[in-house]
Image (cartoon, rainbow, N blue to C red; front, side):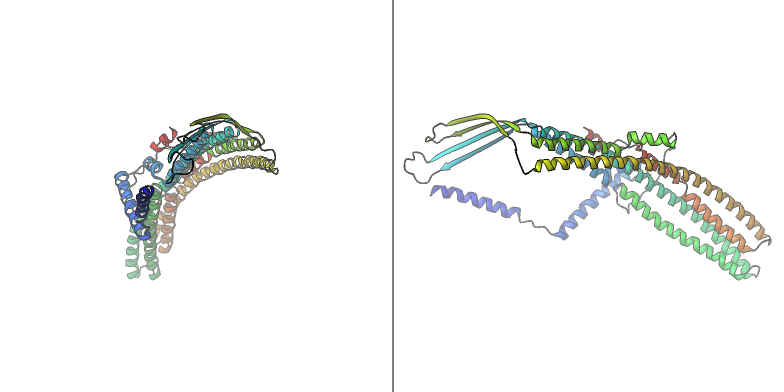
Amino acid sequence: MPSRSIFRPLLLGLLLLALASGCRSFEPSRARREHTAAFSSNLAARVQAELSRPLSLDDCIRIAMSNNYEVRKADLDRELYRIGKNVAFTAFLPNVAASAGYSSYEKEMPQQHEQRFGTADLTATMPVFMPSTWFLYAAARHGYAAAGTAAHYVRQGIVLQTSVDYFNVLVQQDTIAALETQLEAARQTAARVSGLADEGLVARWEGDQARFAAELRETELDKARRQLAVLRGELLKGLGLPPGAAIELSGETGDAAMPSGSIEDLVLRALEIHPELAIADRQVVIQDHQVRQAFCNFLPTISLFSTGSWTGNDLAAHAENWVTGFSGAWTLFDGLANVARYKAAKVERQQTQLERENTFLSVMVGVVAAEAAARDAAEGARVRQRAYEVAAAKWADYDAKAREGLIPLSDALDARGAMDLAQVAMVQSRYQERIAIANLELAMGLTLVPETRNETKAEK
């Protein structure tokens, strides 16, 4: 049995290959350790490359454009749409299929003159009239373009989030500096008032009040330092870096100004360029093609085909055979399913148009709200600055009078506490106007996105 002796080594080899491919089974603990080690090493390399110097706001935005999770995911989504567009285009190309076989007989059969022979087939088909493919490809092409716009809009959102995180860290650093100054002043005041209380010049509870003010500032300072670690972690996560890495900010934030024009001008400008509306327009066009594609189900389809076959069997009438022709198909009745699909596609198109109208109104109200918030932030910063100036003047006056014994010391301590609170509020509002302007720019679709290597590659 020579044929069996040939197949046995082949089957044995396939069995060994299957066993070898399954030798390495999945172990969750080991897989977790390997991923942790590899990803930690990758993060350490990023930290060494990106955090070797103080970072400006532009530096943080640049890093986020390359490392942020949402940005990278948007690029991958766009790549999937690009592949889907290319797949849709293949409907215009011919399909070629080939097959081959080899037959062997162990025993001679009656009237069988040869024991072994081969066969081969080659088939090529080409669509001639299939209009649904055009609409399928057009929808895929618009989907790819919408994915590019969506990726850009994601980048705009990450620019805003990175800016907010950067400003929050700066605010917290300034808050800590203010609290440190306040704590030192409160400790000096507590020591002076405690000495006066020991000498009987002021009431004992006034000394306790001064010490409590120092303890309160120390507690607020500790809380602010812990919050700074949290805010730095959020900034680092947005940059695609480990939250525990040491980061230093240079404080360079660039210049920013309110978009010029009336609120009506801002709204009209947003309606012209906002990415969400551009995406909504694409979705409506895509749905139009879906309706046309559903209508094509009522039309016949025609294809050109050519088939060739070869055989080494001498019993065959012809060793070579070629068949060429046209094939067509036309669904005459499928239980009215095509009619239902066509009606459903028209309803889905109406839904898409309604969603675009809702997006239109959302953009309008978003611009109005963001513009109002920007003006509120500017006015709020001025008010808090003025409140601190008034509180500082009041405390200076009360402190001088308390030292001369003209007013109770507790009034001066209360004035000092009010001034400290006003100072913290002023510091925390320092960058609120910048954040509000950044929100307004995103609401209008004006946020500038730095060009990155990944985005350039995607454009190509």
